[in-house]
Image (cartoon, rainbow over all chains, first blue to last red; front, top):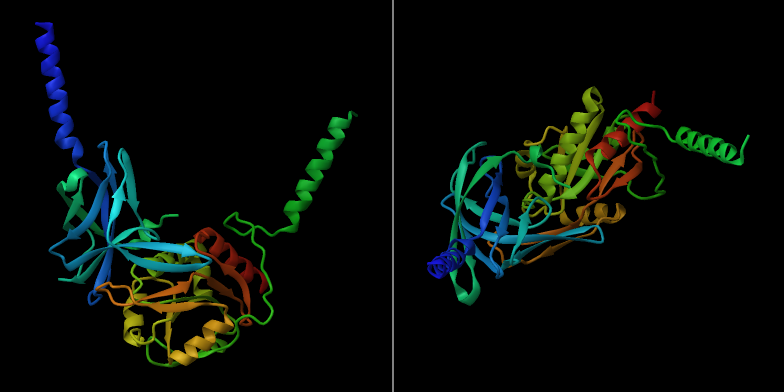
Length: 151
Length: 199
C-alpha cells in the first residue's frame, strides 16, 4: 500500500513539475502614459522563472500597438545608448526586471491614444528548453511616469 | 581627564567644524557649487512656440539644462520625471527655475513635437531646437556628445547622448553638473542653494 502511495506521489510531483512550473510569472506590468499623437511608448514588468531551465523572451504583441520590440539601455561614460535586442534570457530559478533606464518593451505605432488607468493586454512569447513555446498573457496598467521613478 | 575623552572632544570639534563649513539645503542634503571655467555659455535657438530664444534672456533666473530627443521613449521622460519631483520639492521656489530641453534630433523634433513632449511635465519647460550645425556647436561647448545610430528598429534611428543635467545660475554660468543616478533631492538642494546666495 505504502509503495503505491509513494509512486502516486512521485507521479503527481512529476506531473506538476513538467507542466505549470515551466511557465514564467509576470508581475507589476505597467505602460508609460504618453500624450495623444505620440507614436510609441514603453512597458515595464518583472518576469520570474521558477523552472529549472532558462527561458528566453523572443517576442511580444498587443492589440494596442502595431508591433512590440525588446530594448535595453546601456549607460557608459555618461552616455545613454538604447539598443534593440532579439532575445531576453530569464535565468532558471531567477528573474528579470524591466524598468525605466534599463530593459523595456517598446510599443510602436499605438493604435489609439492611451488613458491613465487603462489596462492593455500583452502576449509575451517565450522559448523554453528544446524550443518549447510558451505564451503568457499579461495585463499592463497605463500610468504616468512621474509616479514611477526608480533608481 | 583621560586621553580617550580628549580625543572624543577633538573628534566632536572636527565634526562640527566640518558640518558648519557646508551649507545645508532645506532638503537636508549638503550641496557644493562648482566653477567650470569657460564650459557652456550663451546660445540662441528656437523654442517650442517657434519663438527665438537666447539663454541670456534667463538672466536673474535659474535653469536646468538637458539634451535629449522626443523619440527617446525611456530615458528622457525619466529625466523629466525626476525634474518634476525636484520641482515638487522646491515648492514656491519652483517659479525661479526654467527647465531647458535641447533636442539632439532636430530632424524629427520641431517646436510642436517639443511642446507636446514637454507638456506632460510641470517643470516650466522650454523645448529648444534649431539647425543641426548650431546644435552641434552648442553641444560641444557644453561638453555633450551625441550620435545618431541606425538601430534596425521600427521606431527609427536612435540618438545616443550624454546624460548630464546642467545647473545654470542667475548669471548664465554652469554651477553643477548632475549625472544619471543623481536624486531629485540633490537637484532641489542645488537650486535652493543658488536661490539663497542671491538673498
